[in-house]
Amino acid sequence: MAPGSLGQITSHAVRSPRRCSRNGCDRQAVATLTYVYKESTAVVGPLAVNPEPHTYDLCESHARSLTAPRGWELVRYDGEFEPPPPTTDDLVALADAVREAARPTPRPEPEIIPTTRRGHLRAVPPPS
Image 1 (cartoon, one colour):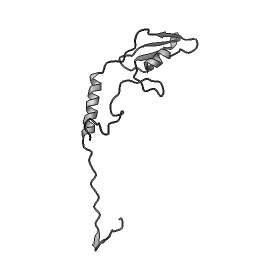
Image 2: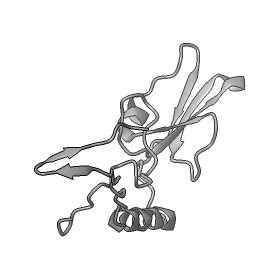
Image 3: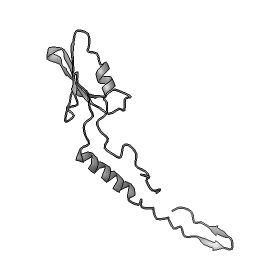
Image 4: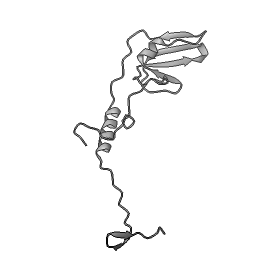
């Protein structure tokens, strides 16, 4: 493995920060969208500390451009959306991924097939 190279590690090997819930968007989430169905209200605020069911993480672009369904009220946070700081879990996941990539991959033992040698030719028995 070349110095500075992570070899076989892919982006899926490392736990990435929370990403935008919108299809096709791979940007980091900085806001959380919550629907309050009882009040017909959509709320876009700072990123929730923990992902919750029935909420959606959004990148800044999608958080700023979101519109509410017809007849609904939209409440949007007016401050700056900032990505959360890295957690120790993120650092541990990265360290684990690097250790996993550094492990040598076991090579399968070659299958030894008995042969009969006659000069430069070999007779290989039929599979049993």
